[in-house]
Image (tube, rainbow, N blue to C red; front, top):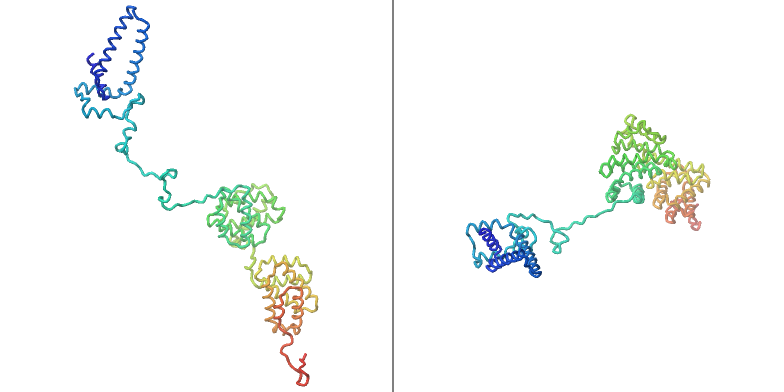
Length: 469
C-alpha cells in the first residue's frame, strides 16, 4: 500500500503538479465508496445515492484514462526517481521548468515530443540532421526568376500527325528539285518533329521523282546519301521506305510505266551510297510474289553485279543539265532546230529544249537559229524561225538576256559570216525587221544591227550629193 502511494506521488511530481488536496480528495472518495458499498450490502441504498455512486465511478474512470495517456511512458522513470529519494521541490526553478514540456495534454498520441524534438521557435531541426541543397521551386511565392541566372527557353515542336505529313513534306521536296541544296532540306527536317514516321520522307521523295526528269532523280539519290551521312535518317528508315514503295508499285505503274526499272535503279544507287544495307536484296530473294516488285529487285541486282558496277552507279541517271559537255549541247540544239524545220511542231521543240535543262545556255539556240536563217534560201526559213523564237519568248522559256546575247553574237561575227554568205547583211536586216515586228526583239537590238552598205561614198561633186548604191 505504501508503494502505491509513493508511485502516485511520483507521477504527480512528473507532471509538475504536487497537490496535497488532490491526495486527500482521493482518500475521501475511497472512504465514501467503502461506506456506499457497506450500505449496498445492507440494502440501505437510496436511488439518489446509487446514481451518485455511478457518476463518481464514471468520473474516476475518465481521470484514470487521461492520466494513463500522459504518464504511461514515464512511469518507470518516475518510480526510479522516487525510489532513489530524489524528489524535487515543486516550487524550485527545476520543478517549474518541467511544467513547460512539449508533451500533449489532450489525451491524444503516444506522449512523445512533437516533431521528434525538432520543432519550436528558433529550432533548426533535430540534432545531427544534415540539410541538402534544395532546388528552387517556381511555385514558391518567394521564387525570384531573375536571381536564378540565365533562363533557357526550350522550343517544343508538336509531333506531326499522319494526315499532315504529305502536306508538309511535298513543298520541301518540290523546292529541293529547284535549288538542289541538301543543307536546306536537312535544316527543315530537323525542325520538324516526325517521330517514328521519318521513313515517310524517303518514300514520298522517290514517288515524286518518278514523275520528274532524270536530273531530279539524281538529286533525290544525292539527298539520301547526304541525309544518311548527317544522321538525319538511318538505314532502318531507308529500308522501311523502300519496302513501302515496293508495295505501292501496282499503283505507281499506272502513272509511270517505267516505275519498276527506276525503283530498281534507286535501290542499287542507295546500296552503292551506303544508304541501304547490302542485305536488302537478300531478304527478298525467293519471297516476292508481285511481278513489278520482282522486276525492280532484279534490275537492282543486275546493276550491282556488273563489273565495277558500284563505281558506275554514280551515273546511273545519266549526265544532265549543265554537267553535259558544251559540244554535246550544241549538237542537241542543232538537231532540235533541224527537226523543227522539217516537222514544224512547236510543242515538240518546246519539250526537247526543256529536257536539256540548260536555261543559262539558251543563247546558243538563238545563235544557231539565226545562223540557219542566214545559210538558208527563201523566206520560209525566216518565217519558221521567227515563229519558233516568238513561241519561246511568249512562254518565257528564252529570257530577254538570252535573246539579246544570241543576236549580239551574230552581230559580232557577221563580217566573218559574210565571207561564206555574201548576202548575210541583207538577210540579217530582213530577219531582224521581221523579229521586231513580231515583238521578238527590242527596238534597241534592231537598231544595233550592222548596216549592209558599209561606208558612205559619193559619185562625184557634180551629182548633187547622191549616195552611191
